[in-house]
Each structure stands twice: as C-alpha cells, then as structure tokens.
Image (tube, rainbow, N blue to C red):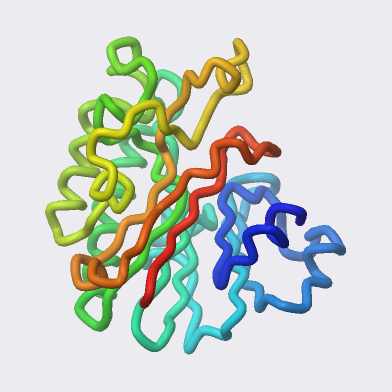
Length: 235
C-alpha cells in the first residue's frame, strides 16, 4: 500500500496473487481511487492476476480464449479508448522443465489472442513473462540454459512474439544496460548480490512507440521476490 500511494499510477497491475477475490485483504477492498478487476485460478492459492485502474475501462475480459490455460487465472484484458492493456502471468516451465510443453502451448494461444486484439487497436502487455530473453537479461546465463526461464524454446518463443510486431520497451530504450533484473530467488542472498533475472516486461504494439517515454525497474522496492516495473507513456 505504501508503494502504491507513492507511485500513484493510473493503472496498477499485479501478478501471482494466489488469492480468490472473496479473500482479498480489507485494505485492498476499501481502496476508493481505483476500479478493481481480478482473475483467480480454479485451484486455491495458485496464479491469479489483478488490475487497479483510476479510469473505468470500456470493457474487461478474462483469459486468452484457451480453456486449458484459462483455468489458471493468468490474464486480464482491459479495453480503453485508444489501446488494450493486457496483464499477464505466463506459466513457468517448472523444475526439470516438467511443464515446458504447457508453457509452449501457452505461447501459441497467447500470440493468437494478442494478434486478434492488435487488429482492432494497439496493445500494451505487462507482467511476468517468465523468460529472460537474452543473455544480458540474467546474471548467470551459462549456468541456466537448461533451466526454466532461459531454455532455447522459451527464448525462441519471445523472439517469435516480438517479430509479430511488438517491442520489448526496456531493451529498446536501454539496449546495452546490464545488471537490471526484476526477480531474485530468496535463496543464497541472491538479491543482495544482484544475482537476478529480468522476467517482467512491458511489451507494446509498434503503433504505440511514439508515445513511449520511459520504463523503470524499481529494484529497491522490497516486499516480493519480484520488483515493480513502471511504464511512462502517453497513450
């Protein structure tokens, strides 16, 4: 709550909430400034995403039109006058890559869903993409080529998505910036040593690029194993 008050965003997205809407904390339920939209997993204590928006969207939809994936509560789309905002928590490929196949099926369904939206109006995608796209996007690339989040298949999936007409804004603005991450494991003091991964992104339709101002990773904001990411855009 302190961070939300300090940043004072027009739109605030959260991922991996692991909370049914009926069990939200009272201080969240009682927020007056924001309209709230929640998408929960059918499985208790798993996945989940939420959007806080100062302005009421024209419409809000849930999921990516894939019954298998949508049971997990991983995506909310808010439609505004000039763009769609998609808040997403992409599946993790899992320890020993046990759910890599599901993750790759997600990639196909998500791309089809986003391209349908993009035909109507530009798209802003934010959230945990669960992949570090390039070697510069994690601290120890050589040690992680067979681990979830940095397999060739996951990285190729991100490359394919970007080629469809979308921009990884941070890497576009800061192509050579190193040691900027959004996730650190709780183990082995990884955060204090900055042994991290850039898993959280803003991806936008090329049509929105003229309005983009900046993207910042709030790496000093604690309270999670991820940090917030802020997009400044005139859209």
